[in-house]
Image (cartoon, chains in turn green, purple):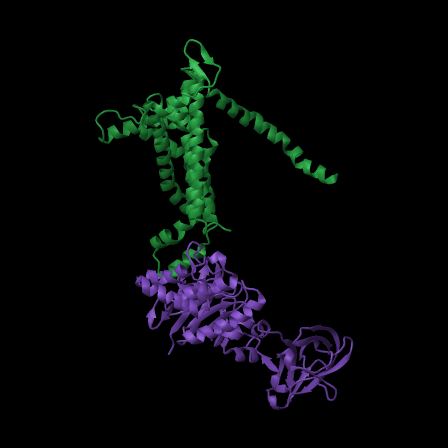
Length: 288
Length: 351
């Protein structure tokens, strides 16, 4: 009797959260999934029935293929640059002394407290034809006419890296906390130079942090909407902005839904595959 | 001929003086322990020898060469860290071979030498494992092999056994002693454990407040402590005040013959007497007292005896075939006068 009661208690206690989770996530996702199999006619709107034409269109149309390719290349580059910036940043932060460590950590993570839209708008101000970058380049004679990074791949990449680098810093920071600083001293005492210590002792130990940080950054970059839509705009579409346009401009909800589903599935496949690879390769670095 | 020489080295951290004019001379092949309570400056001294800290004053000379300002990776010293500091992402063999790799030793040779070093510490069968798959004692041995394989000028041990449990620590003490004798590397060990220092070293340097209080062979440090601190830090001691008067020791109302000790007359001196030097006796006791507490440790009994000179601690070996002296019993105590130590009031400042 009491056993049965005990069995039910955890479910009872977690039911509000489960209910919210089901209502807010599972139901809309299932509805999107169902929607993606509906057909769409410009005059008549969404039609009942079960068709695969939306998916067929995504997989055969070069237009969509290019968008998917752009999204994933951009996400990979974002993860790469975040690693290149974030790893040294986290390492330097970790070696700072008492008051500065806290101040600089706050400065690094502070942008997370500001809306992505605001941060991206900041970049838009810098990137524009009359923006700071353009003016400075002309003033220094680096360019004859105004330069703009708006609506370019580079511009979107810069803004995405800026927005997402704190996640990399956090992830690397966490694995640096587990690193025994004495191992660095041990390597030095054995004759290693500072550079060798970094390459052979520190880096291999924080690789799990770098890899999991890049998973987070990749996933966030691949699904990012605000930054690519504000900097990239219509001329540089990614999957998220394309799905948005299908929903709100073409009103082709089924196609937008299929785009969202394909993005989700690709993301899941890439991330789980990558995770499994990390776990297998770096099993000995993770604490058992 | 001294191999390692510390000339008046000091280390100040802002206002705090961690090491205060320490001089030490070590001969080649010697095993020296720096012994003291935490905060006595022993680890700071070791770090200055290792090169991780720069002395505020003084110089360090190794094999005739001044190394005071040499970088730690150019000193060629083997260091065993307190928490071993093995590289978790490398196998045991790779860990040990790392130092040789830094010295650009060819791969086949370095693996061969790493294997030999692991054989030396009896870990030959674990070379492909990762550090986290080993026990604390085994990790300790890997750290020792890693430090020894580079043929270091000096072996520095930073509290090497403090993370092991008591039984394992005793075994490792014997083994450390044996390996150091065999390899013959000049070794400096930092420890706060007096029995460890006595067990393995050729000479023990007792530090307090950044200074060396005494440096001597283990037997001499224990038997002839030069200061109150040394006598109470190494082992237990019964200390009491007294004065010397015409060949007699006057303590309170007691007047004890000191016979052959031949001390000059003085007032208010401090004496120390080791617990294991005191015996129970029935006739002609030097002191009488009442047993107020006793503890059985297997190999020996520990008694607390209330006497006129204060509480006395007495160790009695468990070889009398009886169950010790009961609590509450009045007992007579005696000792040989040559076991009585006169303690200098002021610790000797420079050794």
